Image (cartoon, rainbow, N blue to C red; front, side, top):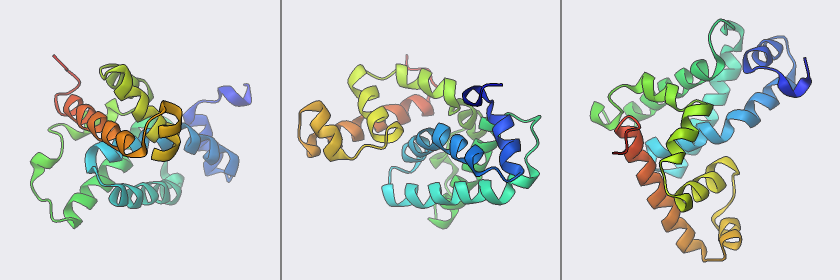
Length: 176
């Protein structure tokens, strides 16, 4: 199998056997999706950064128990879900309405295909700033240069786009 066409599950097996390059590939495939999902849920960069680091640390620690019969994205987003729940608890948010009604379904929808479907429900401008900020890891200043606008305008656009995406997730993806 071509090195670039390896499945997430086969990469995880290689990572279990000590291949650091396999982890690097998984990380590059999912870093934007995980971070974007966290920002939608937490709307706080410092909290999202901390949870983000903990998620990949948990992935590293639990790699030995991964079973390839489970799809990697679902397994990863289970880690994301438990990390978010722990974060909500530590922040004193015991109100479960803060979390989506069916969190496991939303974690599943954050997998690679369905997150793109959710982004397609945003306006072109909103999807563009979300992708630049959370998928491409661009700073507000870098995005401002790309869009030929000010960093403060980009912050507003990203904030609006995140709110729109949050509404889509809270409605289960039905943006009617």
